[in-house]
Image (cartoon, rainbow, N blue to C red; front, side):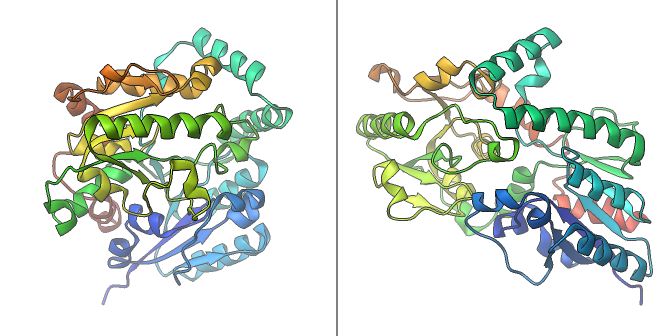
Length: 395
């Protein structure tokens, strides 16, 4: 009997039940001997406080030091009867991350990398001068010494990695722009692949749209990814949440529908912190189902907006006086999302109540968004099926 292929996931942050779902671990375990190495404790120890939950499943290994990880990792690779597959999520922004990539690069494995941004990047659509101007404004308004040092190190390590790390054996790309590029496999965004797996479940069967869903990012109340680089978030607790709850009040009165909060998977709200949303219902771990049954989705900039696009649900992008005054990266990304989807944006700090009428969608732009940012595939395969069929079983 042929032994199962070995798959090792190398992840630089905290693994949660959310990641178990979006990486399709259960499916991959059915076709391989899979294990995950979680490296947040040795790569980004200070960032652990940003996570309120973690997955304690047996497939996850955690480490006390990088050398302990290296020893365990190489032991696993050497013990494999066949060449293992490594799905690597570790970037090359710090020297510790570079060390991990060097170890992976020098080991006898098939290296697999996801190119899966999950949301449009405004930075990719503008020229060099515009990027430079945005960076300069960012430094003046929100840049810190820690951020400047982090950015310099990040640039240096990324360029250094090109000299000392080998290329990936496979790149899993949401949009395969070059079908002739060797070992580039066209794949779905994580959200779209989860949608493919769940769309026929009972939770999706109901067509009820009796609520409005706000896609929470956790900011500015909780620590976000900005903690890694040391930059300040453009929104403040004192201004954002009062404006947000006042806007919700008006919207609920205008539409006769309640606003519910789809919590970010990184965070866990308590009775005290739920007050920031005017004691509205906050639901954890059910974002796809919540969006599927909504009449309108509210967002600043979140990959979960994909669920609204997949369900052809109207979207409203939320801005504020603070965000507009900052006139920087988050504002650009939010406005870019509004333009690409053909959906309106609104300043929740000051708005015309007559604007809150029935919202519609631009079907052409939604369809274009699906093809460009969610999946270019037509066969309906999930990411797990693609990895097993087009990589593992092809060897």
